[in-house]
Amino acid sequence: MPINPAKVLITDNIDLISDYQEKGIPCILLLNDKNKDKDTSIARYCAELDKDEEIRVNSISSEYERNREIARILGEDYINLVIARSRKEPLIISSSDRIIIREFTTNDTNSIYQLYEDIGDEMERFYKDAEDAGSVIEKYISDVYDFYGFGIWAIELAESHEFAGIVGFTPRTRDDDAMDIELGYAISPMHQRKGIAMEAARMAISYARKNIDYVNILVNVREGNLPGQILAEKLRVFSSEVRYNIMNRRD
Image (cartoon, rainbow, N blue to C red; front, side):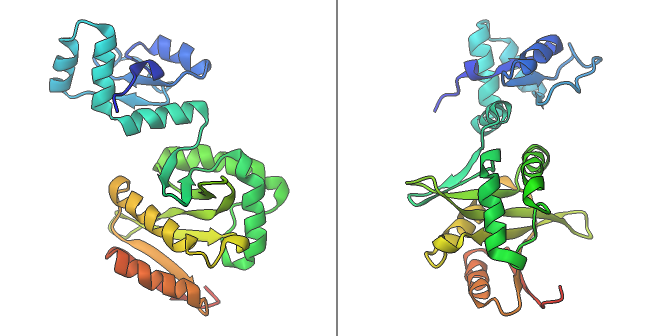
């Protein structure tokens, strides 16, 4: 699908970036010789063309077509990311006929809190109590998604858009400074035993293969959690990068 450059401002003018960002308009600062000596830290999103790309873009006389070419070089995924972040909309990570995996929104706060209450000690909590939940989820959205480009995501039913659980990855640094990612998931009790956990985990792993730079996918399963162990074994067959560990109850 062609990228519409009208959806996002792409410019090397730092003053325009400042004005448009305040209005909530998606912006990308194009780094080049015109702004190399200026403070560009105000720009939330920046991009830089290589020399050949810059020559090709500058040879285009139409400003609209020039911006269209820049958008094509940066790629549809990056343009959509900038638009979603600027509008505070969740990115769709993956979807099937049955479920959608997407980023959290603050509207998920009550559903996530209830999920943690239902699952209990099986999950590492994002927050301490309900009062703390909203601000922590909002900070998670702005800090984790922007910094890593991934995280824990919401699972919703495709037909009803009902919240069904969570799935995603947490980064784990290795001794060699590379990164493993740990798969985490939890399904709301009313949606368990329907194959949603397996489907969501496979979709998340498929997404990671294309979009995350990692070495191994870690799956930690508590001792005695037989369904979790079975799922981990199936995921290891699905993906050779999966490494799973059974944790005793003291871990």
